[in-house]
Image (cartoon, rainbow, N blue to C red; front, side, top):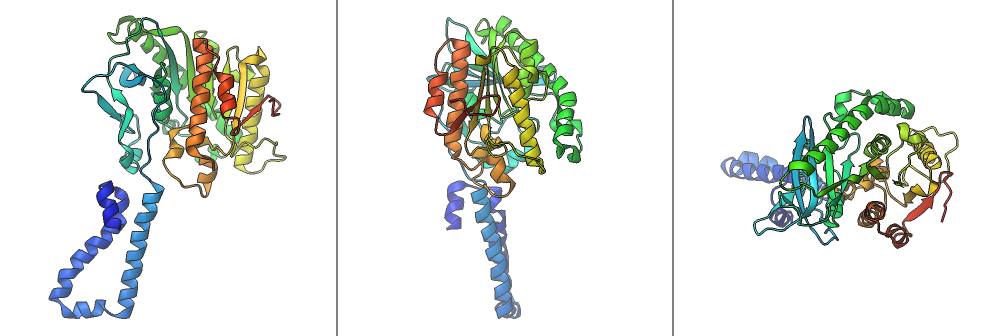
Length: 417
């Protein structure tokens, strides 16, 4: 059975434990033929038991690893446009652009988790997912007389540029040009002690003072690069609407995006995917923003006298976002939604990578239907930007479509409708 699975899946590192069993049997067979004494010893009861136990353990390990790292089905974008992708850079910042494209006969599919910004350990662990996506490399931009709406994407603190690939492809399929940023420094470069990450107040202070300045600088460079492309690039010249653009960020990226909106008046709408509020924007912003929050570490009822790290983090998060919502004027600009049975990773591609929901993975991934949650977040993000950047009226209808997954809340953490 395992042999048939291997033939269908091809070689994957998860087969290594079972391969040890196969290689061992192949090596033992000629030895047993040449040496009857060894063969007789291996046939003794205790030898059989030990051999079968080790073999069973190794084969079981392979089966478990194949379950833990499954070959997932990629979502199909719902928009009308073919999606192109290309790389651009400026100084020490690189961008992956996703955009509505004109199809070509020899178009080359972009392979998932294959970008240079993807950590090598992920490329190895999830090498089986490096399959063609619904995007194609270096296609021409879709021919349009009108300027296209632009979004910038900022990833989480310890994450990477392609951590929301499926979501960005979805946005591009609906007509947005999305620029995902690979920052000049990785999270590990800041050498924040592990004990600090366990103290929410200190960890937030380090993020605010160390990462925020560099992240904001990189976003400024990214916008500068988009301006250059809009001025003189053969593909994007005069096609990007940079007078009114939006930002979407995951985790720390959402918090940084809101702070960036305070300094850049052209940034007209922000979606914060489960990020806290660590910077100046906690005092309120003057543009429409959408905060979508997890439920695993963020119960509706406040935790009295929080003791655990998760409880303290959740209470910090609650107060930060409450302050942002309460201080934003006009109040109609502030939208705060909580997704039932979701974890932090549910707001990126990561929750799709494994079905495991035990131990810390239960709270990190959430226990809800991954596809349903992703579709809801996609729909809400898309419709929000359609409303505030394209002049449509789609956001309220999107909330209603997913009402069974959502709680709409206000700054006092009360359900508003």
